[in-house]
Image (tube, rainbow, N blue to C red; front, side, top):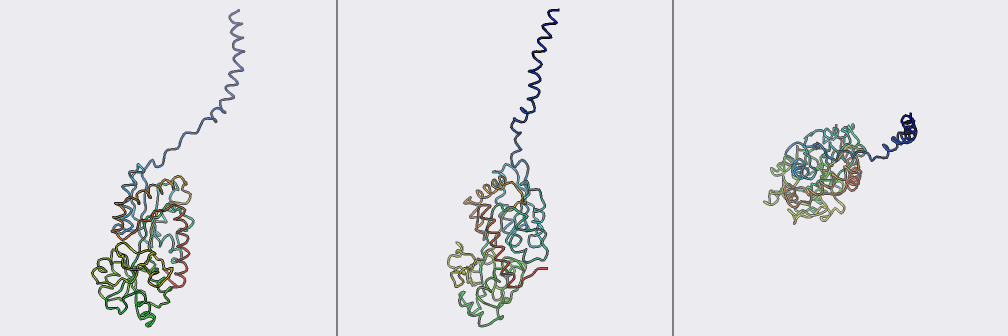
Length: 337
């Protein structure tokens, strides 16, 4: 009997403590730190490039991906989706999950100009993406055939003013950055030129070489050797700074058009809503790759200038470019069906 009595006493003494512990269990569980999320990235990243293979943007992306593979610890897979001035590829990016595993490489057209060029856009460039960082700027050159009387930009402007509508200027296609650069040149110089679209910078440069068209706005790869050989006259570069590969050629601003600045560019965007920490990580790794001296030499050999920046700077630049090109497009009445 004594044993049973002492057992009952012991159970009665322990029961309140057991109940107290049971009641505290949920609170203790809540106090535990949450299990850490999987570190980013933990699977391959898809990089949607809005250009076909072989172009300068595609080449730059393929130059940086080995470095990103190393720094991110995951494969960056290039997915070329050209079409509709970049709208096809970026439309896919806009609809992708905002988790950092689908990125887009878009250019001035799709991210800044197309909203003014196309009646129907499959996305809003300013709302549907989170800028990660610019990759590169593409300066252009205003060139002419040696038979053109003018040899400098002021002489060219004076010649064109004497012949309103009498000079034509080739470019790389309607709505391209080269087309818009030519339109801005025409507007700022107060000229009336006849635009002639070609399927890319190379064909436009060849047309001037063959004296089929007197003038063109083209990129450096399609014109550098011909300029060096004296087969093309370089009137000015369209960037705000002279180019290392053409140091003797002035900028358009230096040659009589203060404030002229018209370059192609492309950069990386993510779907809107992508976490800030992921964007910051991607920007840091991309910026590190673009600062590699060997990569910079390779990029400049392609005629593009490395242009690493912050997500905030890239966002401001996209907004500024959108406003600028909207005004140029309205004034020139450029539309793409």
